[in-house]
Structures are given as C-alpha cells and as structure tokens.
Image (cartoon, rainbow, N blue to C red; front, side, top):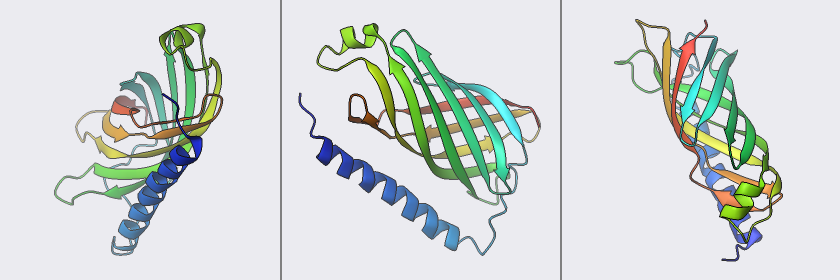
Length: 175
C-alpha cells in the first residue's frame, strides 16, 4: 500500500490544529485561571503501557509539564519529548486534569521492523507528535495515573502518520 505523504501531512496538520484550537478555546474559558488544582507534583517516573515506554514527567510551570518517553523493542527504539498544558476537568475530583500538547520524536528502526514491514525502509525516524489525555494524581498515595492519545507523523525516514500511539501511564511521584 502506497501512502501519499502530502495527503498524510494534511491529515496530521488537521489533527494538530484541531488539538491546538481546542486547547486554546478551553484555556480562554477557564475563568482566567490556569492554575491546576491537584497536580501539585513536580516530578514522576514510571511506565506507559502500549506500546510500552519508560515515562518521566516534570513540572514546567504552574499549569504545564514536560514528558520524556523512551520506547524500546526488538523493532528499535524511539525517544519522544512532549510539552503538555494542564486544565482542571471538574472541581468535584481534585487532582483530575486533562492535558493537551505537542512535541517531537527521534528513533531508529531495526532489521526486525524491516522484516515485519518489508515494503518499508529501516533506519532513522524523526517526526512530530501531538498528545491529549487525562491525568490523575492520587491524593492519598504518591501515584500518578494517566491515559492519552499520541498521534504522530514521521517526516524523516519512512514517512507515515501513526494514530495508534498512546496508552495508560502509571508513575511514582518523586515530588
């Protein structure tokens, strides 16, 4: 199956612009407050399940975090950096927030990946990522749980849109 890079790029831009505009609109309607109640943790480390990664989040400012993800498998590895803006979801559940953001990834696909996808090239993979999800910091334990969707577009190496990244994160709160 041949993928048209221009059509795929348009799809990626539509998804990213929709995510960005949604975040902007909701940020404007948050009563002027970007302070996120309940996500008072500065750093956390843990695992993100599907496709499987080590995750490290740290506080960027009062209402945002940065996240580094390292995915590793027999098919290669991928390092992703994300900037995530946080917003309270509901005042009835302190610590429950939704977030939106973007970033970039860099990785290398192995010969195993090439064997699994014979029409694709192995080698370097560099691209852009979006992210949208929910984040919950347990009040009574040093745990953080999240679920997100992380669409990405590989622009250097084999060019393609990937809508299947995301997952459930479970992290230990360092502070």
